[in-house]
Image (cartoon, rainbow, N blue to C red):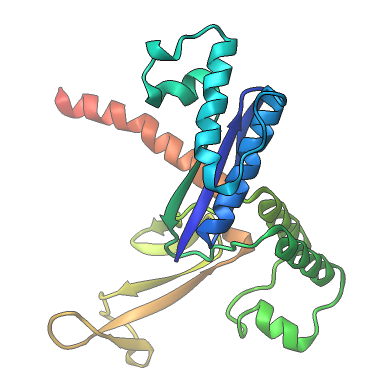
Length: 251
């Protein structure tokens, strides 16, 4: 699925504003709104609002006006440096969402989604809706705290990272635990079947040759083993050890 990500920065405000859209037309409308806010905050008399068809030209004109106000001759800098020098920009990127659901809605639709989530949060979920919330029992329903976090992400237009981070913990060759940064399901396939109960083995298909027996176990990563902060610390520790390991290897 392709989605259009609109990102904007402001010369007097830190951080970025981001919005996600399934339709490029809606992305252009949002980008136009951001540009018109910049123009109004910069010089409302000289920089009148622009329409959707000319928001990019309106952005460049605002950047040029900002540079002139700073006493910078636009002839002295490359046009690709306008945004960095002026201190603000608006851009649209088309990205393909792999392995996640990208919710792209307008403001009116978002209001309904948020209202439905808050209603679900405050009332006991009836059986028919519980079946939807759990996808037929595949998932554990979101807790009240998780719904709070989801509503916050939707309000801020934040998508989860495209990559799922999974850590498999081993002890003595056996899987002792699985930690992830979001709900997921991991299947461990063990081809060492010596001493295993034949009734518990699965004939695992292969790309080449016939299926072979293996022991297959499922690890459903739910709230008790979702720990993105711990995974971040693990990554940081691994990154810190990498230079030291390279130095030892080179000696």
